[in-house]
Amino acid sequence: MTQRDFEGYRHGVPDVRWPNGAGLAVSIVVNIEEGAELSLGEGDARNESIYEAVELIEGERDLCMESHYEYGPRAGWPRIRDALRTRDLPATLNACGRALERTPWIAQQAVADGHEVAAHGWRWERHVHMDEATERRAIARTVEAIARTAGSPPLGWHTRSATSLRTRDLLIEQGGFLYDSNAYNDDLPYLVDGIAGPHVVLPYAFDTNDMRFFNRGGFVFAEDFARYCIAAFDRLLAESLRAPRMLSIGLHTRMIGRPGRIAGLEMFLDHALAADGVWFATRADIARHWRAARSLPVWQPRACPAGFSG
Image (cartoon, rainbow, N blue to C red; front, side):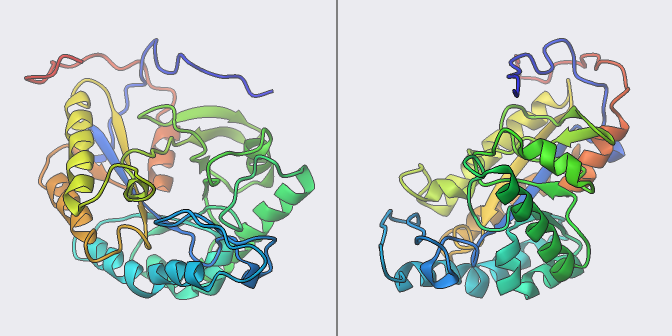
């Protein structure tokens, strides 16, 4: 039985500085799900029902929904890729295995640009109700698809929302996984025991995430995304003078890749690049750094920045 942990770093944060003395690590995550959404046309039992509106078509292929998801690879990904390339920034692609089978050029372009390709499941689906055999197959198929399209197996895993109680154990047992992002409970990585040594958990975030453009999530204009992410960035950067921090920015090609929204990503990136004390990194690099520093003593508080009372 998985035990809940409400304490976290209540008794002290490890004395970790990110490379070059940075206090804040920023992880840009591009979710590649298009082609892995549920679809009768792909042989699934039902169609996906969630997009800008919620609508479920039963018994027939939903050509409207399919075309919505096709927008991401066709038009959204090139915009996101350009925003990252022109700023020479690394990102992690959270990629579904079936999505990369449909769009292998995305994996190839990501690797060429220096990005990490991590695993986001075989289909874009929850694992919470899977039996063990089904979940094992899903993990294995995902690893195989990413290894084939990206040239190497994934080091990280992130299930769509709810995992099963055994997901993390199966990932550790599978071998080759350095970390997972199946948690939302901190602004820092943490370690759990694995059969081959410490396994890193990199918490993800749904608030600094372009998913909030959908389903009345609060973002309407590009500036909404930029303002919220900049506010989170500025706060964590101020806190990082006292203890290390990590910020995850979640993107989707079919969401932020729209022409009326992409400027929000560009505004955030330019703001973050203008600051000192920031390390942009893939999630694998963040996990490696945190695991290597796991035995350091507890962080000793630095001087409190002006205007900050946390």
